[in-house]
Picture 1: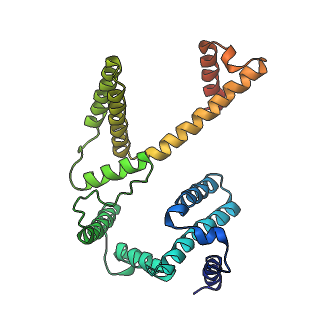
Picture 2: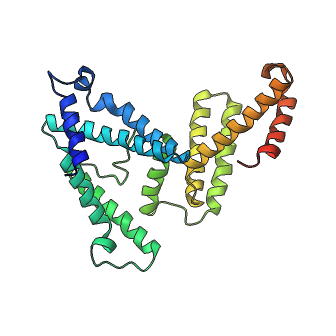
Picture 3: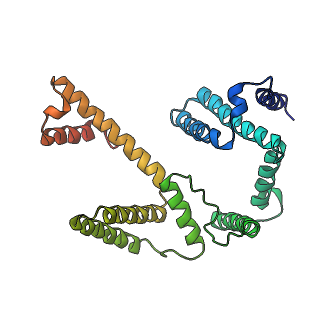
Length: 266
């Protein structure tokens, strides 16, 4: 094992020592560490988006620490250790890349992608046999962000034949669901409104899939664009010596259109 990797494992074991370790580290468990794992993953993404290579190296180290932390807890409980974690992912990479590690030849990217999806499906089937989960949707983590979970579930269903063969019906479905949201709004039934909004979001995710757009990334980029334009509005209002609430909506909307011209599409 690499020197620095072994040192990291030794440090984590020392931190978890019941008498000589750190009290905070000793009392942690899988559940208590979950928020930190999620936070560190998002900080890696932030470093990538900022193109900060030094920060990326540091944040990847923080993610690795979480892997080592969980592995140490599992080792203490006799469940598995870090070596077995590494072995598991190595086996998976070899199994899913027969064109690299075996003699399999794919004639196109589509053929390679199909084999990749089939390999994952085979793995899920084996896992389902062990856990008595028969659904092809089994294994999609319930803690995923809603848009991501929706996309993964739809991908699973599509891989097993439940999908529109072309995009035109999806556009029609978006209009249909939007009309149902309007009907629900006119009914005044808040629970029904929420249900129909959910249906609309689901079919928009489906549209994104058909258009080969990642809905999570698309929404994030649009939110960032909204934030930039709104900050422009704040700046213009501040220059006039007023607060946002002092302005009429028409004036704020004019600043918004101005922001679109000044800042561009991004």
